[in-house]
Amino acid sequence: LLVSVLALAKTYTVGTSADFPPFEYIENGQFVGFDMDLIREIAKIAGFEVKFVDMSFDSLIPALRAGQIDIAIAGMTITEERKQVVDFSIPYWTADQSVIVKADSNLSITVLFGKYRIGVQTGTTGDLWCTEELVKKGILPEKNLKRYDTFVLALTDLLNGNIDAIVLDSPVANRFAATKPVKIVGIIVTGEQYGIAVKKGNTDLLKAINEALKVLQETGKLAELIDKYF
Ligand code: GLN
Image (cartoon, rainbow, N blue to C red; front, side, top):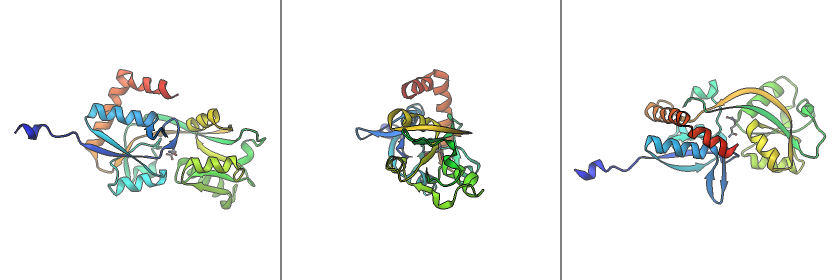
């Protein structure tokens, strides 16, 4: 009888795309960053364990749908399109898009308008914005929009001169501008909000995540995490 009440805490598999500092990145072989601490704190409150798996950003939603992961946390913007296929927590962050170029470049925001090569991470809201607002409107030729699995690859190509600019989330652009030889030349105000995603219909887990998020807000723990990473 005693054994049955000593059930082990459930372990959830958390998918992320660990190339997005300061939200998620790998340091000394560990998953670190704001999102990583956030989900660990949520797990503590809700009483579950987490195990992280790293994948490309555009694999996260398919992995959730296939049941390969239980939770996706990756600075993921809550969009109408994604809401059709997964469920999101209450928002925990607001961001815009930024345009970065090499630090020694004299290109400006007009880098977006025509002959230059723009890099994005596949399937992100940066990709979506460039596709909808530049490619589909005939401003940027499709061949000049280069899609990458990770920002690490996009940054390498930017620094090598294989592309001229990258469009990415503003908090991450700020971090790259502070730590790499790149600079921000423009901001595209999108006001997008990040949420934690679960498989559609996983209401118990979503409820537990939302309740824990509220506790973290109320206790000041969330503010502490923001101070730690920003
Ligand atoms: N917030 C953006 C999106 O959801 C980018 C996220 C990311 O690259 N990790 O598409």
